[in-house]
Image 1: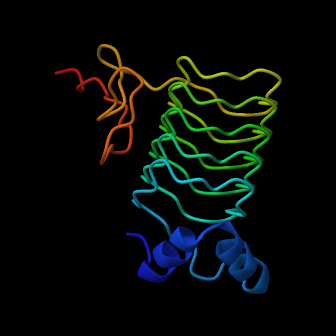
Image 2: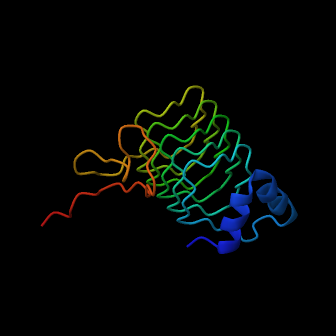
Length: 166
């Protein structure tokens, strides 16, 4: 669950967030499950932050620093991640449907089960990234996502798994 103080700070904008991060790195940076859909967070410093299950659909994270950030289960559909740094990020089951990741640095990220359909990975560096596909039943889709239009209260993108054999 997201920290109320962290939520208030991120909603104040990039300058407030980055100033606190620089003064107190790692201090109270829990944005797990937060609804940050459509926010403009260009250049935000989220390295080591927890964004597990957060909704960042349609957000602007161009040039954001997400080094070793915890993003597992987050919805980053149609998010702008141009020149973002996601090195060693935890991104299992993250939804990147239609994300723009041109020139993003995603080296050694844990991305097993990530959904990358329609993502623009032009000149992105995914060297060493774990891109194993999770088993699915049918076509995985991002919850709340419809035809490219922003959705209010879109939720994290679950990767449906096949039931265990009997």
